[in-house]
Every structure is written in structure tokens, then in C-alpha cells.
Image (cartoon, rainbow, N blue to C red; front, side, top):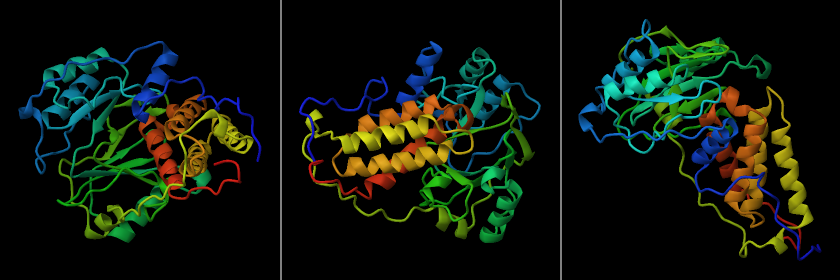
Length: 347
């Protein structure tokens, strides 16, 4: 296949390159609003960090947002303020997790109307159950299926504004689950996302434009996940990814074939409508990931464009930034594991 020697690589929708997807999406959304990420002076105060086995769910049902955040912090958790609509963190929460209780209160008083999220520590997992009737995902049916399959005990259950639910558990030492979305197809029941170490989960008394988060069944203790559930949460060993033979990336290697696929997938995400955006984002991420694996496009370049397309279709407004990160990364991993066979002249 012939190609022009002066063809430019497909533009990454006007974004600067970055190594991490989360900071990139945060910067995109905050740039659109004309705001900058807030820098918080965290303290390395270990006495405020909860130890494994001591964490309990605090009763914040009658509290204001600042009071609830401070109470979660006092109980040993890490509260994180999120933007009310997009779900993007309003502070650089990964820098240091030890913000004292008094400063946590002031932080959430400063960000009036924000969401209250908890950064999940090691040993805690939350099953994020979606309620999407259009896809056949009914929260009552999924809860029943979970209890039947895994013999689940009673645990803290938080209802979400969209009709979904968050079910909290502890997991034993040695269990290292990963954050999954249902699109990844790794959990045996559809409509269930897995949130664990490194994930953010929104809690009561957060209010959104479409409703509020409320404890449907509050209890302070986290029940230990049954062994059947632990087995389902433990990711199988990953096979080494075999990448296609690729030379250093240069504009002359970008053929019309690759450009066509690239533009088609990015446009498919940008123009996707409600009810199908997350599925389309996963499919397009996987499709472009297979080209990356074959040496057709650079990974960072593809990731940037997918992020911008997800923001453009307002997926982050409904599903939140965390879920968007995970969908893109899951799709890319799926594509990288299956390099596309490119026509002669594309490599």
C-alpha cells in the first residue's frame, strides 16, 4: 500500500501528551471549565490512617457534607471531593493520603455541593451494581443473582441516584482484586463493576442533580467476602502481551488504512448517545489498542484521543471520571493482547 511521505499523524484532538490517563482527563475537564486543579498541603500524619481490620462504616446519615467527610476521616478512611457533575477529583488526592480530620472538614466546606467519595484501601472491595433497564440490567435481579451465586452475607448497601447500588465487603489477606468494569467481561455477572484499592466510590450524603446517595442498609462492620466471591475477584494470570514488530513511529508510517480506522473509532465515541457510550468507548479502545499492538500508532497518542472523545460525548458527566478511566484502560488492554494484522505497507 502506498502512502505519502509528508502525511501528518492523526491529531490527538488538541491535547498535550501525558503519561497518565487520570491527570489528563482531569486537566481536560478543568480546562473546559476554566478552573485549575487545587493543590492541597497534605501532612504525613500516620496516626490518622486506619489500619486494616479496624475500618468501620461511620453513620453519617444526618450530617452535613463537611461533617460527614470529617467523620469518615476520623474512622480511618480517605475522603476525596469530586466535582458534582463530572466526578473528577477536585484535589490531587494520590499525592498523600493523610489529610487531618480538621483540614478535611475545611476542604469539604470549601467545595460546597461537591460529591463525597472514598478512596478505597487495601482489603476493601465494593460491588458497583448498575441499573440500566435498556441493557436488561435490573438492580434487584442482579442483587438476587449475586446472593444466589456467591452466598453473600448482609453488608452495607448504598443506593445511587441512578437506581444502582454499592455493596461493601472486606477481603482476606492475599486477595488482590483489580478495578474492573462490566465491559471487561471478567466478572461472572453482567452489570457489576468492581471497585477496590485505588478506586473511588461515592457515598452518602452526596447529592447530584438527579438525586442523592442514601444508605439502603447501613451497618458499621464490613462482612468478609465469601470464598466463592474472592475467587471471582482474583484476576487470572495474564499472558505476556506479544507486540507486533514495529519500527520507531514516524509520520510516513501512518497510512490511509490506519487513519481511516483511527478517525472512525474516535468519531464513534464522540457521537455516541446515551445508553451506548460506555460500550462504544470500550469497543473503540480495543480496536485502536490492536493497532497499537501491531505498531501502527503510539499508545499515548491513542489514549489522549479516546479521553478527549469521552469528554466530548459527556460520558464523564454520567458515569464519572473513574469509570471512564477504567473503560479506556480495559479496552486498550484487550486490544494490546490481540495485535491486528495490518496490510502490507502499514508496517
